[in-house]
Image (tube, rainbow, N blue to C red; front, side, top):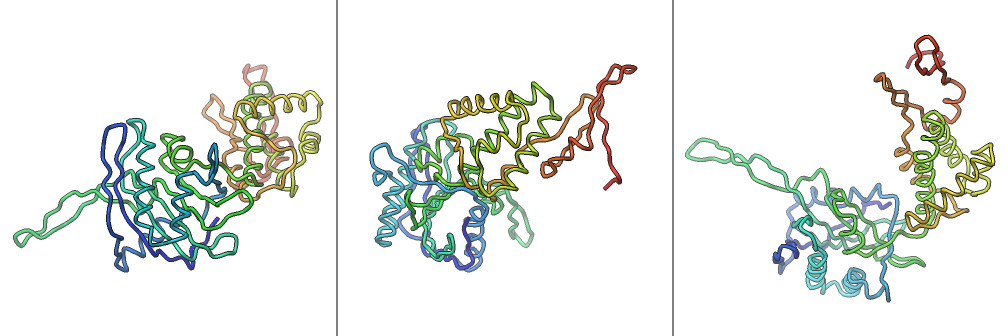
Length: 349
């Protein structure tokens, strides 16, 4: 989603956020971090690398006026006047503190950062980053004591995984300011995205593609699998992926005609679509452009394994829509009184 080749970290401050539910108190810094070259070179990829593979963006939300969204307001003021960075970094952490309304919300270090030179859609821009470090790892530290080395266990931040983070870009479109977010400790889905950031997905091809593929995945799991078995479920998912790969845009009616042969199945899909929209409070578009990057990500979540009670598994390639119908047969052995699959192939790989 972003490129960090020319990115620079120009301001950074670290605060500690407590848990309001447990009556904790924040610890707020008064001055910026001064990095040496080694720590700077480690920190940049740690903070920015996760956003290089983010497929979807968000936009700020508010029930009355999006300008009243707290994080949108603080970030906008930082962009307008960088001298207010420390002041509004504290406001950001205090706002995060106010969202810790349960015991499971973790305390941690919060880094508020100002970046320049981030590339988003071929344009260089700046961004306010907010990163929460919730988990620390144990490591050994050796030290010299009376002419002998000893060891002590200390806790520190692992550079392998970012717990929570967001980038508020100084870039906008017709829907508003662009926000990117990652959350690798998703113990409370409401805490970071809804309560702290108060953002919603951008209404674009990425969201439309995700919703439609989620619809097809759930339909295969709840309707096709119980009614027709894993074999037909795999066929449906492979044909769905093939349709998305072969078409630049999706048309709901064309999709049904190409995927389903019987009107009965088309009606079942249509009924389930209404159920899916109501259950998830979403609108699945009938016509939209396909997002290749979301297709690549979401198809990895489509399960096409056939697991048998004889400890054998058959995995169907999601990118090969004709494989299951052409090279896999299902039957029943009267002598053994067992079901079976017959697989055709030319050579083992």
